[in-house]
Length: 475
Image 1 (cartoon, rainbow, N blue to C red):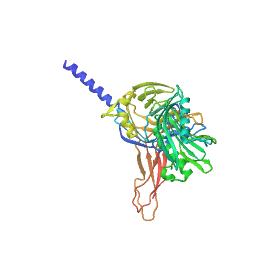
Image 2: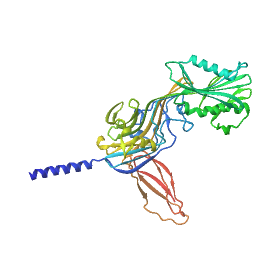
Image 3: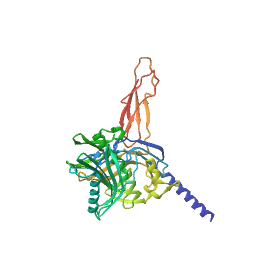
Image 4: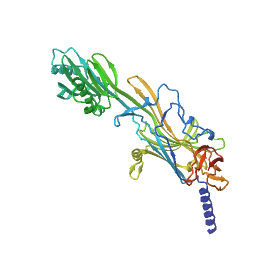
């Protein structure tokens, strides 16, 4: 019985030792410094287009430009918090990664992380001019307009009404809920009327209940700007109109409007300013590609990604084996929004700090000894522009270069081993570099020589492939 136990114990030790020997290479923290603001538009980008063999992997991120009649700036949407047009995409500015041989852990450091939400915004701002109002008071005119709106609408309710002053002229303003038809969502509207000489000017703002308070301040500034130009009261700076555009109505009358609006209609009686966009998400994902070195090396072997799935309304982590164009799911974690990390929602932690983490169990890849990794972000959505009635397919990409695992170790030798220099003498020292890497690299060469010695490399930056490279150091 003791003999049997002893044999089993030996087998267990041998098996455990074997397992340890088969771990993937371990290494300390590494970094890929990425260029900032280098996202690009490519409707054809996919895993099938990523470089395959080692000879095709470059020292720079992979780019493939599609032939399009629009550019990346056309895919921007207006961010009302920052007050500028931005892309709802993440820009990689750094990648860090480390491995203990059992797990490959990486972090994508990003410009931002936004949760993809389908969005539809329609803002309408009108300036109507009625020149046939000589024999009617402002109060009577407003009462007639309210009566018209009630008769033409499925639902109309004035929430509040007030008299005010626009420049030096009395004005009437009201806010109301309005629903034009049964199949149309309830909207909120603000209307301001002012009579100047024989004309009545009506300023009308309409949008959804949700959007109404967000843009109300800008609309109020636009209405006030009318009195600025008509009566020369106040200044643009006092009204905070730095981000506004001017529209001239003629006869010395102008109005300022928010710069994100477009003038979509103009005639003698109506000027329409609108901002409309409909954004429908297709996918948003943060991806690491793993290419295990093999004899035929047919291309990427695995994908590890954190992606947004519309049907779940949540983030999903997936480890996939690929054989282009097919794939097999190895592991999948649905709704990582509810995974806790130190009592903090993991996805909230990522969003607040603008990073995404990867942790790949290398045993699921059979502990590869040599592999290359590649990172990219993707934000794909359809953007319908109501003003031009066109829908743009926006596929915004940012990529990293390929990097080899294990990281390269650069061996440096010199020929000769040492030199003697006299004042004014010049000599050349050959420096041999062996980077022990399968992928091409850029090496920057410099010296930390004594200030009294002028030492320079020629060239100072060089591309190195897999083998030994010789450079010359001039003294």
